[in-house]
Image (cartoon, rainbow, N blue to C red):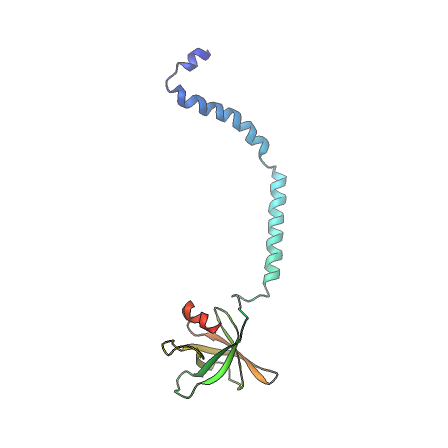
Length: 157
């Protein structure tokens, strides 16, 4: 019978495949994780995900960068007044937190630019979202009206 099987056409192709399947199938069955182990792993993954979402629910949407205070110039968007000085306390992809000497009402539109920037650097429009007293100055939280290119964001620290 073995002699008859060896004389079949294409034996050099199907015989090694058949031997591999016969040997590998029992090994795969032994190495397969049990259903209970899969259920336990799935339950642990769900618990970890829930714990992570609870821990991250109080965090802000975008990464905030602290660091050196960068001096900026600001002015009201529609006016051509002399720019005033302020400092960037922290920054994110969504906006800036400024430290300044005057209070600004929520919704005020400002144009800002770093103090040391070249004249070619465009003014960036921001909108005041929050303003609170902080020691002897005001901390003003602002969002970008239109998010500037990353190369301009880098100039704010």
